[in-house]
Amino acid sequence: MTEPLRPPTETPPVEGSTAEAHQERPDGGLWEHPYLWLGLIVFGSMLTAGFFALRVVGL
Image 1 (cartoon, rainbow, N blue to C red):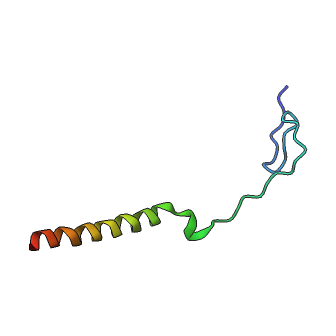
Image 2 (image 1 turned 30 degrees about the vertical axis):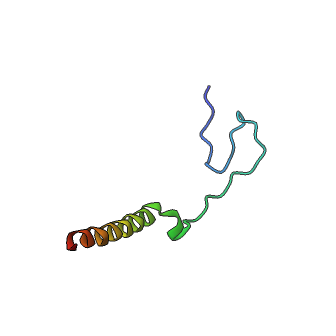
Image 3 (image 1 turned 45 degrees about the vertical axis):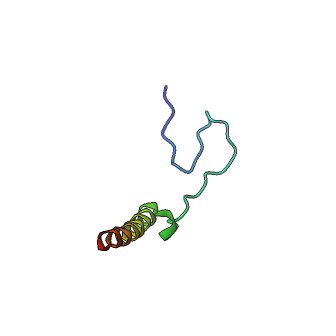
């Protein structure tokens, strides 16, 4: 006979853990969105490279 399904907050007896189920952290906001920071870094790099490319063309 199979075990009945348990709620997500309860540890099944098979695992043998006596610890409480941990609460999920709330969203950390801007710091947990690495693509935004990556985009800003790439954008800044492209601006810097463009500046030097225009200086070379202007010579």
